[in-house]
Length: 474
Image (cartoon, rainbow, N blue to C red; front, side, top):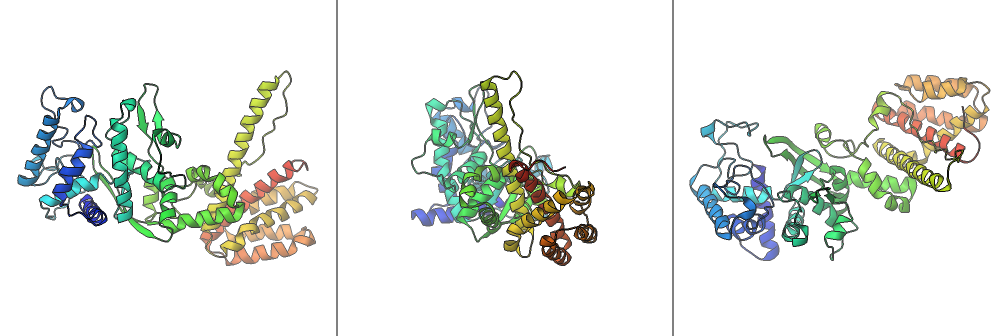
């Protein structure tokens, strides 16, 4: 029933901005109904509501204006005369007469009062849900966000009514809201956009059948773009799912400042230009599944953990950042070799983006001396490779890779470091001494992040050594 509050916050902001005094019922009749239902294609499909209950022979896309008005009148009568339930009040439980059908979850036995105006607020609020990947929606009560979502309603309606887009997906207002909000808060937003410009942003998916679907936005991508608008804010979001069964995940603080922390360190580590050029790639890599993010209790740095990083904590796995070998093959034509080289180059670039994404998040997660950590693990990795290169036996490699870089505790890490120091070059003794002091003072959580960060820098430095023509180290 949070949709009531969202609808109320929005309408208050809308009236103020437009110097209007609409009641919830007036707004519903004059604006909401006209946009959402008074057309052959609906913008939302509210299960069991009067708008989707068809009489014999009726089909939604064939309804006349009079028939659509009749369904509106049926709804208005229900809102005025009946006790609210899920068939005509969004987010409410099913009718008590049906003993709360399976569509109702977590039904409270507390009596919650709701008047006629609340029913209309619930509908207005329902149109303001933000759909994200994972099959869930998010409600924010921030007026600026709600007003921005509202601006997108008329755009969605325009596309639905466009004769050249006959197979454009109806009933997807929540998915549309997520993509629209992401676009208008993006640096690439332009006032003179059209369908083609949005299509170029990969907002839509074209099926072989000709159907045009609205892709669901990744929550992390949206998170980064909202953070541009609210860089210092923490907003409370309500995560939910309305479908065959209504699901409530709960209220969670969205720490948008922490997205800016990620961007800050990416620029610091790799430069302003790379941050701009690589933006789409790293935004797609950040972020756990939305349900996992909710389990953490808040949406911020922890929830932005890049996909695939978890295995490096659990397994002590060595990442692969090696450059591809694209030497010509015997009998291979020039065109085939060119295509293979280009594909290898793309894969190499993906590896670089992956390394940068992982390193940025790990640096951001280490709670102390973040600025100092920017180049520090790289310097340690250089020292370790120097030690390994001068060793005459395989002992050095095993000591680094099988003990130091997979240590599960600070004690095991320092024990391995002691063995390295015994044969280390004098030029790097201070580096190892500082490393010991830093590790000793780290929290257990920070140490876990630090070891994985050092492992990544060590492997990436190996890549650079090979690229410089010094041969692979074994």
